[in-house]
Image 1 (spheres, rainbow, N blue to C red):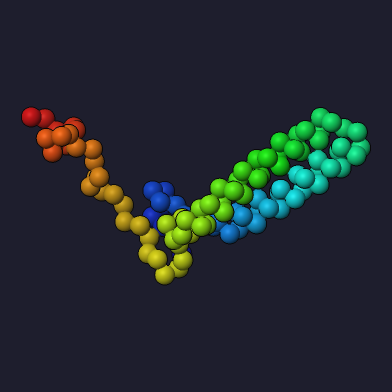
Image 2: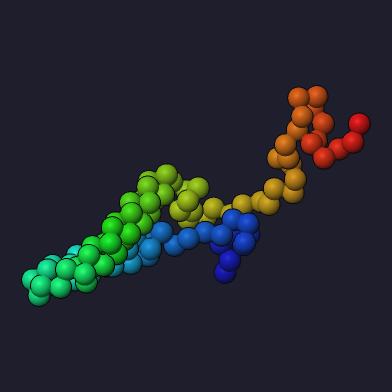
Length: 101
């Protein structure tokens, strides 16, 4: 069953993405430690960079989860209605920007 009106408002499974980011962070940190112990500084730097990316992703996912149902809707929240041009930019005179005088 679709949970959104894709592609306009596709919804992300944030809890699964959080778990995958945490799993990747753990492996990247373990790889960094292992390569430092093995004397491979280039591989350790690559794993540390990957750990930084995973940590950033984890932070963004947690932030979106805490923002509530707009980013993590439940099954009881219906798909978002498309815009249909209701939020177009208007001039100070109240006309649409692309309208002619």
